[in-house]
Amino acid sequence: MAHSPDSQLDAQTDPQSGLDPLGTLRRTHYCGRLKTAGVGQEVVLCGWVDTRRDLGGVIFVDLRDRTGLAQIVFKPDTAPEPHQKAQSLRSEWVVAVRGLLQRRTPENVNPNLETGALEVFVTEVRVLNSATTPPFPMDAAETVDESVRLRHRVHDLRRPPMQQRLETRHRMNQALRASCTRQGLYEIETPILARATPEGARDFLVPSRLQHGDFYALPQSPQLMKQLLMMSGFDRYFQIARCFRDEDQRADRQLEFTQLDLELSFVGVDDVIQVLEQITWDVFHEVLGLDLPRPFPRLSYDDSMLRYGIDKPDTRNQLEIVDLSDLVQGSGFKVFADALNAGGIVRGLPVPQAGALTRGDLDRLVEQARAWGAKGLAHIRVNEDGSWQSPIAKFLSADEIAAITKRAKLAPGDLLLLGADRAPVVCDVLGKLRDELSRRLGRVTARPWDVLFVVDFPLFEADDKGKLTYMHMPFVAPHEEDLVLIRKDPLKVRATHYDLVINGAEIGSGSLRNHRADVQLDILSVLGYSEADARQRFGFLLEALDSGAPPHGGFAFGLDRLALKLSGADSMRDVIAFPKSARGRDEFLQAPSEVGTEQLEELGLRVRRDPGAA
Image 1 (spheres, rainbow, N blue to C red):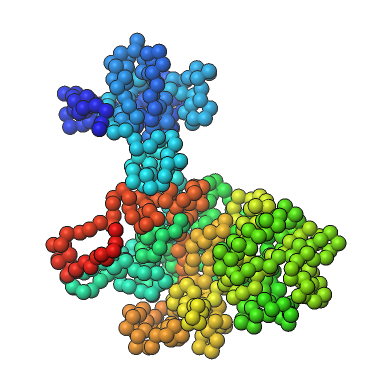
Image 2: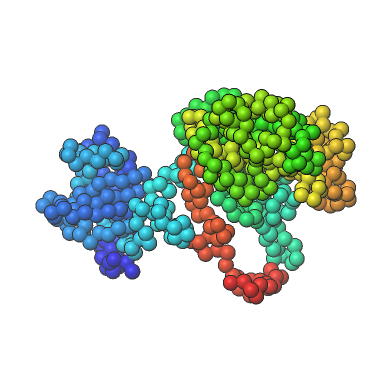
């Protein structure tokens, strides 16, 4: 229940207030922006009661708004009426105050508060609303279970850390818009109610009331629409776009998300990357005051997978993987031979000066590798005399040992971890071990930001059953020199795809697009579409390509991920105002929810519920 009945609210008891709950009070300053230059001035503040302290009759209140805190003081001798009202104030009550801005005495200055040298002596106060008791201590909410914070999101969003994160996101959005505009891009909106397209995740479907049995799909991205804009002659486009993917939740992924979407005509890869680099530089400059060194490094996909085991590496982590497949091609060690004969690879992760890792640590690493999908993990220690201490040493020839030692640059005290399996498994396991051991052993370069582009991804990949699929999406253009390989040897076709990676997180992806219908049909054919199927599913795109499509390419920044990096938050849900939980629910709005039978009938739908569902 509220702490006071409605009759105590000034807005309802003051006959002069009329329809205006603020009366004559109008905010002149935000709490966190009071400055010493204003000392002696009358100020009006509005906000929420953060804390209240009664010290010998003088009442001190920390008033909070989105900018921070200000200390306001109620003295019984100089302002008896406001002081009397202040005695009933409680946490989260909403008030407006008028008073004189003064300096605090030196012994009362709070160096941990932006306004800690100032205070406001109140001459007038209006209680605008009372409040129920907060569901958790506002100054300790970070320790509260996230589900509670999401259920009581209004309270959670009042906290300074959350407000600072969303302010960072606001400034990020403004910097992105300004950078795109300076570079000649038009902001154009594309439909939310669209049609289903194969983009790698399940669509959210919206039933049509007017055409029973037909459905709209919420866009996974504005990909096709922005390509059509290029064909329409708009040349340079951007949009802060809402997108939807019905996929399992992860810490860095939401069912609905926001991206900065852009597309450019008459460009090559270098042209697009230069625009992306400028946008990224502008955002860091405007939001954090940092000037990132340019040009950003570029790393090929193959090189990234070889050296780091992942296509989004954090290159501050100093350990690097080496390929040993050719050195043990004819090895008598059955594990290596079997992996290579099955089309797999053998790679190693050298760990210089690894004496801190005990035998127990190595056993745990082996178990961890198995949990990640490896069949096992071999290891080699290099003794002080240069000899190997390893169960597998006896299976390798002297020449193999010498060649591995040279390529891995092994020295006394070093450790070598080896994986032999299918390439995806070896890369994944050694990549994760690389990151874990780099952090555990302190092998991380001391620089705050690691920004780079990964380029030249494969256009196609084979799934677990050997069936060809696209790596990113079916509209990516191949390298011009690889066009002849599309039907002959599709797995060797390089895509004009590029990712922006910041501190080991993929912030966005892009590519040049197929601007020729014949190339697009070839790619769809490799993916198993007949020409009739392709024209049925993508006829509008193919017709548009035939109408005269310029070479074009684009990109999409993941704004939730970028905001996460810029704000330093731990969870993506902390940079989204009303996020979904790990179960895909909006705990505050209690969505999704049931709808009535009448509404279902109007849409021509019938719900079949799982009798075993909770």
